[in-house]
Amino acid sequence: MSEQIKFTAETGETPERSNEQHERAAKHHETRAENSRHEHRENLEQILDKIEETAKSVHEAGHQEAETPKKSNPRFVGKQLKQNNLKSSLRRIQKDLKPYQRPLSKFIHNGAIERASELGAKTIARPDGLLFGGIASLLVSLGVMFVCRYYGYEYNYFIGLISFPVGFIIGILGELVLSPLKRR
Image 1: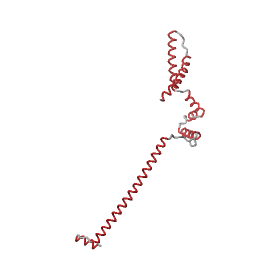
Image 2: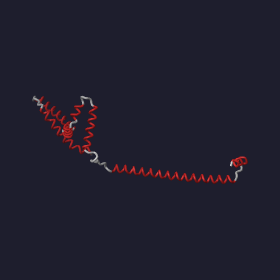
Image 3: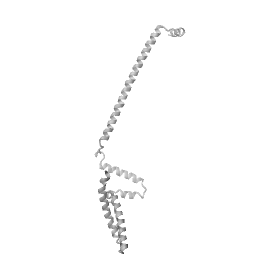
Image 4: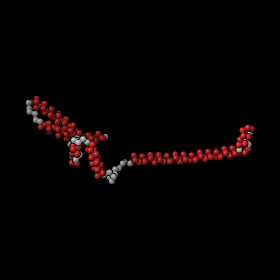
């Protein structure tokens, strides 16, 4: 073999045997390269198909989640579980409070106090009622005080106390009438 290489290098001629071998080797490499290209193309096509299927399934799942409203499952998150989580969170937070703040926190988060506070927030402490009650009390008191001073009567402080609940009721009624309009 080394003689053949020397012979071809010196004379510039190639023996017939080496040409045939080169041609066979070249054909073998070409077919091997084509086969590997096809294998890679097939693998690439399979990978792309899998990616497209995954993307479609994720996209469809996203649309299904968006279309269907999320329903809460009472079996997993129940009233008892919420209460236990609230108690453990309160204990953890109260441990971090300063010593003089803990008794107040325990008093405020007592069950009876919390229920009364929630009831008051839903009924008594309505912002519109308090606003209109205060405005009515101020205006009525100023008006009656002006009239009493002008005509020389004695001012009765009970008028200010009576005008506040009247204004409060007017504010609550106004809130009931105007709240559907605000939503639209």
